[in-house]
Image (cartoon, one colour):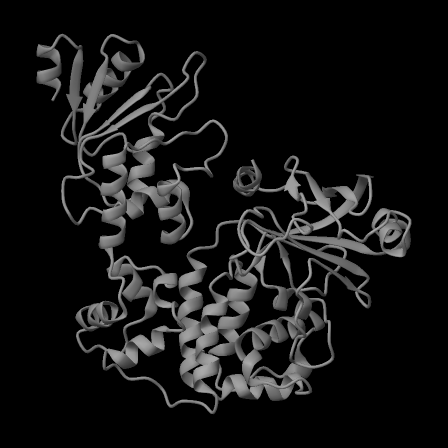
Amino acid sequence: MARVFREAGIASTAVWADSPDDERAGALADLAGRRINVLFSVDLFNEGIDIPAVDTLLLLRPTDSPTLFLQQLGRGLRRLAGKTVCTVLDFVGHHRKEFRFDRRFRALLGGSRKDLEKQITEGFPFLPAGCHIELDRVATELVLENIRAAVPSRWPEKVEELRLVARGDNTITLHRFLDETGLEPEDIYTGRKTFSDLREDAGLSVRPPGPHEELVRQACARLLHIDDFFRIDSYRKWLSESQPPDLASLSLRERLLVRMLVASVADRAINKTMSLEDACEIVWAHPQVRAELVDLLEVLAARVGHVQQALVRHPDVPLLVHARYTRLEILAAFGIGEHAKVAPWQTGVYWAKDARADLFAFTLDKTTGQFSPTTRYRDYAISRDLIHWESQSSTRADSETGRRYQQHEVLGSSIMLFGRLRSDDRAFWFLGQASYVKHESELPMAVTWRLDHSLPGDLFAQFAAAVS
């Protein structure tokens, strides 16, 4: 490549693994000093090299590794005065049919495969400010076709894939299966199916069923959002034991965490008056479900993407700021209700009287879902520290509720904010505790809240894009 470029009048050189150290250093110096225009490398410079002036990347070798791909991109993403863009020309994306576009784009964009297809189809609407990805019509069709064909989509195909990967080995784990097939947990837990169902259909052994096997097994999918090590480590420790934890020996925070787990897993198998102890017995009577959950939690541990913080003013509440929770988990964590089962919460606001906390659960993108014109409140992130939130349309500023919002610090109550991007997201990001700044109008009140903990950059970018 260097020879061809030089013959075309473009000053170029090449280095590779066998090149002497001084030759490599000289090539880098020549590139930085603009004595050459192009530097070709083989298995070098993927990481640890900082030449801010690089503004064009030619990808001339295939890689299916998302980490390596991001390292390659990083060579051109350094900022420099006068440098406005980095142009990336990928010559190998269609090199082989089995090349995985989903891995490459998800390394950049995150989200599920479904989210990725939506981004590509709609022209990447959720990119951070200043970023742009463009595919022409043919490239878009090729990428979407590749993504949809890259992994088995029909259940019988997944069953056959497990047979091939396991080769009769009953010890195969969910983690190993996903790693070898490129599937995601969401690909398994769809249509009320679970990994245990997949094992059974593939002829692999499972543990004896419990009294409510179908209901409890289907609940495994309700844990896919878990993204903090506190829940993951605690749940794995408890579920690995043959007997439920001794509730009397646990702290209040741990007991509330047990309730979050039990309510999530056994909600449809317990009644309104069942004690937490009895509900635990129901969960622990399903050994296959417990084994699967331990397996699933190992997979989820690899997906934790934020550093989370405990609630300083509510130390017994087992929620961490910038982790995700369902409405059911939120109420269980605040100790609402006397028994194991948690009552449904369907509105956007909840006054947790005993905990003296107002819980606000809001959706940013209201263009989807069942939002009527009167419930399309304008909720969005003003900055990483400020949230604009609108109350219910019946709330007056001088009402008991309105005054509590404005005077919560004086009254000794707390404001807890939970936000999600879309209505089809089961779980909400816990944005943490907030304090009143100001409000405008009423019916509804348009309130500005200041977060105790700033939004991480990626969450702020997503929240801003969802309402832009």
